[in-house]
Image 1 (cartoon, rainbow, N blue to C red):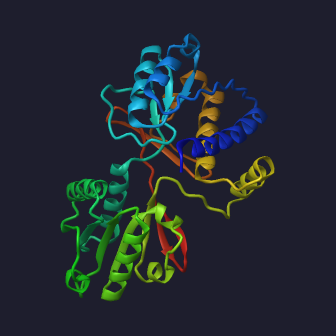
Image 2: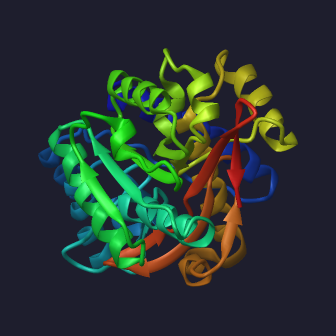
Length: 321
């Protein structure tokens, strides 16, 4: 999926938020620029003198691009929202930069907190698919789980015998660090065949795989970590989907919800507090259609620390509060 595709979807969600905000009495003047995922093009846009007068800059995508915009906004005292990119760190701290997408650290912390709270005695096995990204994620998870007091953490790349690896008398937490459907499904099948007491942790992206065997999911006590989650039974979600279909002739995807939530959040605070809205956000929790926002200033910017943990039970995903 190309960046341009999901940013169009994001923009469609934004437009629906703007329609609602106008009903609340807030009129925003929105300027849209396309940096074509090019740093040189971005610098040309930032050379436009009119940008200095903005209350908020939303975007762009990518760590390098965000760093460039953050430095510019810091110089001109403008709030910045990183709409999609979860920021790991920044070379220059910016207390007016907001990252709504929780990063990998926050996801690892959410799993660690859950294990400490509910399954203190469970050993943890981290499984990678052998890719560089998967191995880096595993090292990060191992470090954070250990720091948070999860005592027994093992990192495995290739497992010759799951029945030997998993304990017979103790429930084991298996964290599968992969976004590859073939690897995830083959791993779940092997764990299932080992016939041990386990709970499996993975990414919400698994729910989009076309070939999932949900019998495995139910029996393996699958838990998924997610930065966003849509509860289709809520009235406000139903209304949003109906209105979105009327305008766009299609159902909203994840980026449409993100665009809507982020602009509703920002717009409501602009309406209440004007350009000083960043001063009233941190330390409080706010719920929208697919996102919960709970910002904390750390490692150079304001990070959304809310991570959903979803348990697959009775053949549906249910959020754990």
